[in-house]
Amino acid sequence: MAAPSTRGRPDEQQPRSAQPQHPSVTGAPPEPHDRGRVEVRRSARRSRTVSAYREGDRTVVLIPARMSHAEEQRWVAQMLEKLAAQESRRIPGDDALAARARELSAAYLDGRARPTQVRWVTNQNSRWGSCTPSEGTIRLSHRLQGMPEYVLDYVLLHELAHLLVPDHGPAFWALLEAYPRTERARGYLEGVVSAARLPHIPGARHADRGPERGVDPAGSCG
Image 1 (cartoon, rainbow, N blue to C red):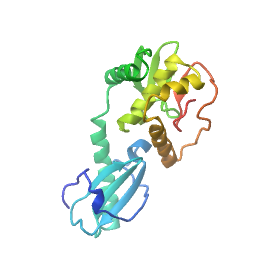
Image 2: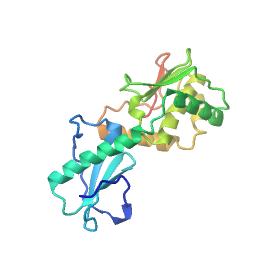
Image 3: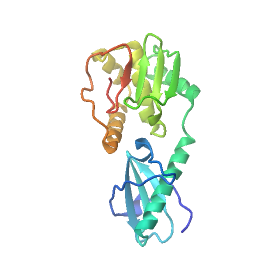
Image 4: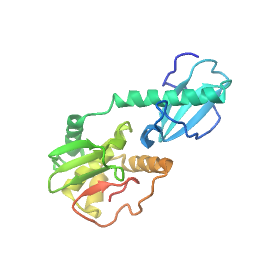
């Protein structure tokens, strides 16, 4: 079998849809944002190569039609690992997050939101992000790492808006209307939640429940 590629050709595919529960080759299941749903597409025109790419909240793996089920399982796991490794090299550090937050504040909030700290955290599994307005700190869940840039920007901007408006009233949502990909980003996050079968927390625009604001798994604020 030829070396795998993570660049596919969507126009050649003859899909055989599937959403298998493929384990990682390390034996530990990938995080939901690493994997989402997996769709295997077999093509008679593929004789040797295997490739994969992200398509929304799912991963598409392209394989030769003649490949056995055992080979399919092995190659899918390998391609998931390869994609995750590539995406991890593009993950911004805390300093880059802070710089991006300043850019977003300048572009959409007239520079009025000025966080004192922006960083990744690994203890937020029920929220995508959170902030403490009194301290000016913003924390983003590590589960966002590897997601599209516009999704990360949305969560950052969401928390920046909370530095200006702590609650979820009309003034808060008016700030987010300036960002053109708000609905697309929310749809992406909701798709990830659905794929991972996480509990949906209803109420995208509900009342303030405390001093710490955050984005819950469904893409809304908690």
